[in-house]
Length: 278
Image (cartoon, rainbow, N blue to C red; front, side, top):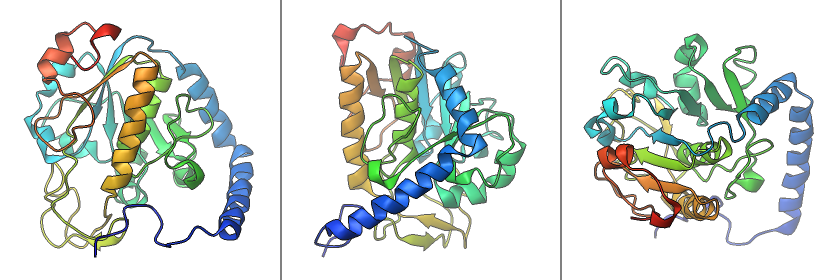
């Protein structure tokens, strides 16, 4: 029997249970909106809205294929690094323009770095209790009620769709980037398990660019590939609607929802809304 590809396991959708969860979520939302960190973050997001209108950006994912990408090509382009991208820092001079983290386990494992870095951070709002006072942190609110929704404006809420890459795609469009490339997104996990279940690494990490991404004994959450695919389909539609280009410049991998293009060609290519998918 295959795993349920959705974020719930019940065969029925109980409207009373869902209503109770919505009431609980409303309370959490009101509590957040009265938090000083939410005010500061919304101010930052207002300032970022369309700030980079028409420019290029790269979302730097954490798959093994990232080591095949020539990061020197994107030194002058805005980059969104994801999760534990800092584990790459001892291998290259590349530094992302900003870093996003939404996974609770990864956040806790990487907390020392997040507390010390001056790189701008975009974090899930639920992490504010750990690093509330850092000036370089902007919090993005994410509710399970909107997990499979794409926010073209990230001021109030973002969808998650099971991957921080989906959050980065929303933020890039919010900031006005019209030509976005993804690298290091293998979209394939060699270690298997029931999606969203918590596993422990037993040996070297084979799912990321660094074998110590998770070390033996550390926990990680099995990814929901079906949920990711749904999010990527939504992202593709949102970019097309906004006359923006979204391409996959990953070396290999299994992500075929977006058109592919070699990174070197994308860097030098002048985007025209008439050549989406070219």
